[in-house]
Amino acid sequence: MDTLYAARLHGFPNLTRGGTEPALTEQSVLSLLIVLGSSLSLVALVFAFITYSLFSDLRNLSGTTLMNLLSALFMSQILHVVGVGGVMDSELCIAMAFALQYVRLCVFTWMLLMTHNMYSQFKTGLHLVPVNDDDIGSKFIRYSLFGWGVPSLLLLASISTQYYERAGNLLDTKGMKERNCWFLDDDAFVYGSVLPSGAFAAATFYYLLRSTVLSRYIVGMQTDKRIRDKMRRKRTLQIILFTKIAIVLSMVLTLSALTKLIPSDAIWISFHVVQGLQGILVALLVTCNCQVLKLYASSIRKRAAKHVPSYIGLTKTAAPNASTSLQLLAWDPPPDLV
Image (cartoon, rainbow, N blue to C red):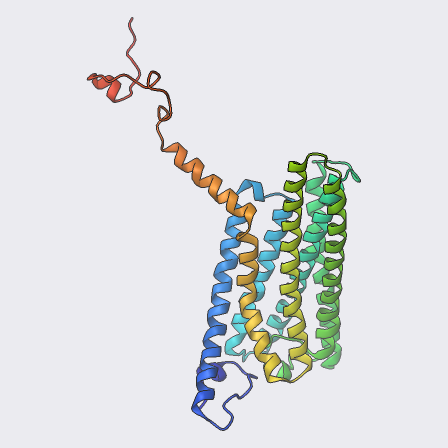
């Protein structure tokens, strides 16, 4: 008897090992964790996106690139969940496989752009490049063309490779349906997704390393110890944050490549678990940090201050005198004498 997850997820390995009841229980728990993880990831990504949309301090170039990363990651989670139940229609299967490969590439391009923007900011702090506020708009346009445009070109190359592998019949999706239409054929997946994403990930870690070295020079140039410690703490938190996100995304990329190329039950299960939880991990990393929490605390204090009367905190002589006048009790302006 198949479990609910094994019945819906084609290609999921048979873990019953002879139909024993403990294996069925373990598989049921695993299916529940994957479904819950994917659902919570979508909710967490929406919350992170709304957080960066609400605060004006976060809607700078760095925050905008992060919002694009969250959007691409959200779409990849959605498409992954859609394929869990199995896709019977061949046209929908090939369309979802191409779309999923595109958004996976977008995740890594925007991750690269985030680290590149951080490195550019560090160079500006070291006065290696001039500060020009008018260049922010044009820079974001260039980022958008790279973040969404380069994956489009790679997708066209993947479509051409898939067309060649299938001898002109793109609707032949027999092998793809075994993997829930999450992956294209081997050549299209490796050359159109794995290798480019690996190159983007390598460039991301390169900029992280360059930013770390540059940050030490910037901090060392400060003469005031308090400013130096504050700057070191802020730069370190930003570098560590981007490094953690890059590690999570690189782990998902590695497991997806191994899942496609190596038939292994352990790798297949690990990929589903990490794929389902990556949204939660990234959302927690970008929202539960010192900068965002300080903005939340500042917003709460400002809202609380609006409900505090203006005379609270004044001296006894400056506070209004006790009076039975209804006009004073109501704080209405005095009538005109004329």
